[in-house]
Image (cartoon, rainbow, N blue to C red; front, side, top):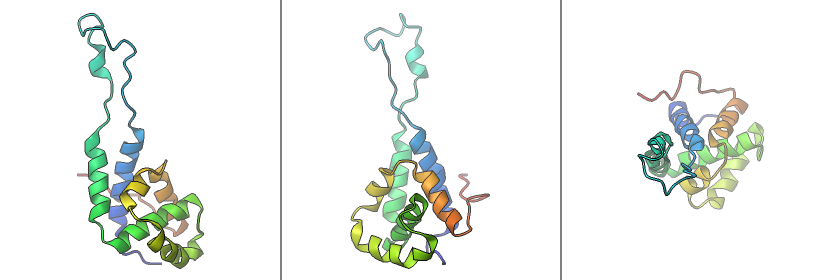
Length: 133
């Protein structure tokens, strides 16, 4: 199996997906207090970084359709929907099945781990790939 999408591109998405999955909305149990009264601890809360979401969505949307299909198929193999030897079947069924790849992929829990598992099924890994500069 040879991918049209580069391993480096898949691995860059894995890095971003890990960041995206780790984000949780900030919760301030005493939201009505003022900063002086609560010691300004509200600034320590981690707010959702929409730039990561936007970057992932743009990255996926900008891929040619065949590479979007491969990305989704790698995730599906990693999830166990298909075996590595069913790659061609996965590509064929996914081509007509998914209408918005960015939405579908970004709504997939543990996307990064599933993509890595999909790569591993074909003897590939992100070791040394996908580093952000």
